[in-house]
Length: 204
Image 1 (cartoon, rainbow, N blue to C red):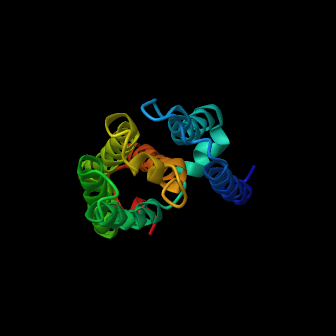
Image 2 (cartoon, helix red, strand yellow):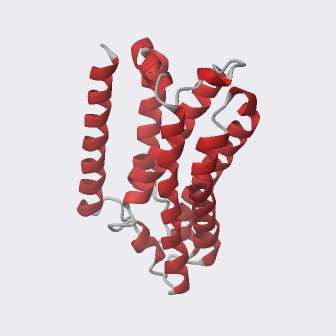
């Protein structure tokens, strides 16, 4: 399968994934009993990442396609995470607890705001360490946000926060946004591992 076909296949799968995330959110499957672990939410967030990892390891063709993607474009996409200001807004309205909203919101804003700078100045073999550090910080932010978001229902089962996080449109963040951005980080790290010494080898 050539790169064009892989590109079409991946875009189709992302579209299907988006629709499935919407369907799951509308169905109410994500809403567990108060005080219980959010198993369904955890599965919808982790399953796409596991599928990507298995596909990347098992298919040389897919692996070559992924490694050939433009690294700057992948980093620029992370700019969308500046929308983390929504968490701050919901916190200011008293709809989300600060222990979750503040680190998740400010973390996303920091990554989203610095993504253009990372794309322009860190996607170079001679700045590989800084590039990898930025990727790891971005992944840490996602893991922290997902973990604290999942814990909200256990810590504050009486609040409206657990319901807000598993109801549209907020539910699309853990079911689609978080795993997608995490996969982009994994791709970027895999690409950086193969960088050589010449900056010109990185596609513009």
